[in-house]
Image (cartoon, rainbow, N blue to C red; front, side, top):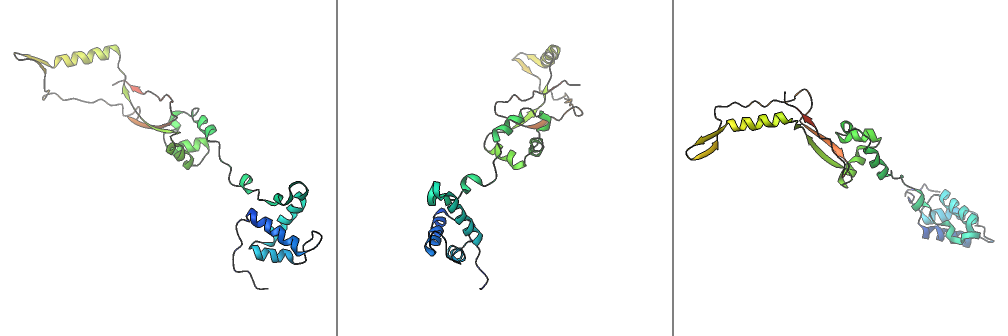
Length: 202
């Protein structure tokens, strides 16, 4: 016999399964296929002989309860990678500290999933990218000092009052370089309260 040159079918349709059983029944007598019938069926339907043998075995074991319908494929409900429970994963995010949610990869590592899972959640609006900036921490005295500073630059003249252009004033913006980054990105759930970061000028 010549070697088979065409590949076998990846799946055997339900219609083909039933046709194969009918082919085997017609090939023999007393519900027993003729010798060599399974090889002929495998060639006819383009599948491996072991596939024909399994279909025939299932037909015999389920005939009394299901008839020929017992040979239909069980693939639709029994195969494929099981999907992760997305809602359960999202619920876990609320327990992860914000400092561990600053990159997609960091969050994926905390959840024990691939980065693509986090990316998909963002694309579907189940997870949000939030840019968080530091706000000045102003005490009551700080606010009063700011008002006094502004009033010192009010110029009164015959035409009324106006602010000085402050061309001869050098403004030094005090930063908190060593304490925190001015802007941070956090990945948060919709409606989740984001951290309010404040720093007092030095």
